[in-house]
Length: 199
Ligand SMILES: [Zn+2]
Image (cartoon, rainbow, N blue to C red; front, side, top):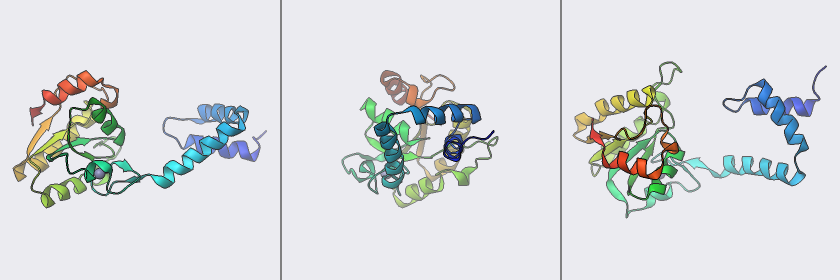
């Protein structure tokens, strides 16, 4: 006995999301059918709108409706510091803290030999281009997560960037090993930035 085509399609779509297997996808698909019409319509609309209206900033890799993103366009920010994060959502965490006023660069990933993610798969070359083009940058703060991949990525960046005479620092380990920066509370983040150490 097979599922009717519309349900089978829906299950297949949910399974394309990260961390969702057949069982969860099936549960979500059947749940979707029981939802209010309006909720389903809004869900579908927000999926389409997010995909249509959001782009990666051509300078920093942040998700944005405008290119360059508002942070890259803001000339009142400290142009001499770039803070490197793994994901666009990490910028939201840093901005909530309100103590960091420099620029950002989003790698959109980390180096991971296990998953086969190499330097060419994440936004490293665009960071180097930025540093070469713009000699106002004096410090790069690497704020990748405290996971082994995050650490390896920080060391890799440090080796690439330091020879250019730019200071490379790493967030202090107020963040426990394996902690994502988007889960860190504002005080912890503030202390991690304040106590950053040179790589
Ligand atoms: Zn930007």
